[in-house]
Length: 139
Image 1 (cartoon, helix red, strand yellow):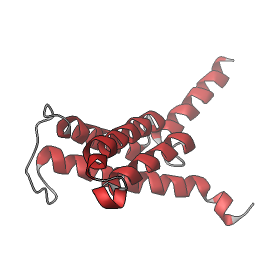
Image 2 (spheres, one colour; image 1 turned 180 degrees about the horizontal axis):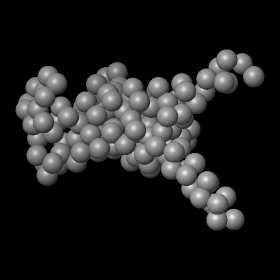
Image 3 (tube, helix red, strand yellow; image 1 turned 90 degrees about the vertical axis):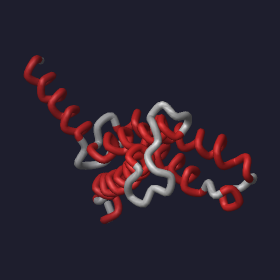
């Protein structure tokens, strides 16, 4: 077993936390008009920016703490795929042409997290451990 194998869960956790924080920032920027927002805040009812901002903020927070990570990541991946194909792709075929690199990258990053899981330091792992302990006590 190499150092890369031993550090896998911790590396995934750091990756999950960093990506989640960055994703939350996009949501905060949209919903609250902060962090250098160009157009001010949007209403959560304005389509598609409002729901996108909500998914970014709440989904990012869930991903950061590692709660419902796989589901949150799958929803975030879908939202970013939607953003890419509906908002960016009509402006050009390739992400480099249509300024959709970030949406495409987030879509793939979150799909990866949906498959790998949260790694270490996740609330999901704490809950799973407690359920295992309770099952042993009840057995």
